[in-house]
Length: 431
Ligand SMILES: [Ca+2]
Ligand SMILES: [Ca+2]
Ligand SMILES: [Ca+2]
Ligand SMILES: [Ca+2]
Image 1 (cartoon, helix red, strand yellow):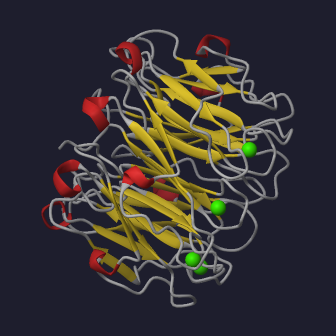
Image 2 (image 1 turned 60 degrees about the horizontal axis):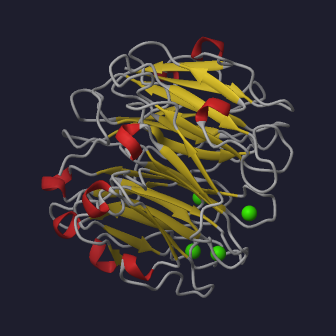
């Protein structure tokens, strides 16, 4: 099963101390919440929530879209979703989801993935919004990947080439012997993304040897030029040391033009088994208008885990970390998911980081930590000194996934923690 929890922010942050104190919850099945995204699919100014449940009905998978309102999201059950999307076969449909306006009509569209299609060739879909009615029940774009690549295990949307239309970014961590790859497809404009094969991508970036590059993606703007830049995680680099990369858009209609992960503008390294890159997020931590970078390393120091904080200098994300925040103890996987959101409305990005197998990797309760920004990063060096700590129930894996639930018409942003039942695992896809 799975439960999505929504916690409201406020001027003093979040006061909940366990998941029963959430402002809202939605219960579903099939690891609901392994993937989630927030946007406005029906143009009413309220944030709408997409949640993937990739284990639903065996491994068929299912995706739910919930429309926001003046009262937030109303229903408490997945079955009460405004739209439910399916795909045939045991293909883990909904393993990765993203929202963005691909065809420029002012309504966010849904990118979705099913990485097991046709022997792990994978398919990436775009379901366009119909307007005030929200997302269409039919995908107008479907793009096939290379054989055995897990294409679409990672999905992102962002306007990489600055033409006003969101572009599609697809990751496939098993490509080229698990080097992994990322494919960028530019929107053609009002028709959206019109190609049907990975061979027609505008950009292909190949990861380093057996690094699982592309399993995590996030877009943001690190240099304030209005062109989306791209963060990519490769948690298996160097036998699970892991690496995270940030690729700047060229600031031209060509978007990102490099073809190798080693050509990234910024590379974050580890010096021991850490699985850096299993969590990646871009957001403005110090309030200067440039997106900064947080990356989780949940395997660091016997899975105590830690999070690296790297600020943008206005041109690119600096490779020197201003903060390293460690988990509370071993076998908690702190940093399995990270998010930046201005929880307390002071203009500084707050860090939300999860340790989904807290306290010991056996009880699997999970914890979510909120760190308020201080203008130059975060004061804490340990999860013990987080501003807020929210605990999950035994067995719940609270914090398996996080999403910024920023609803434009609300005063304060919110955030969502998600828990799911499942086995302890560094991440889902086996290679
Ligand atoms: Ca649209
Ligand atoms: Ca574009
Ligand atoms: Ca940029
Ligand atoms: Ca910044």
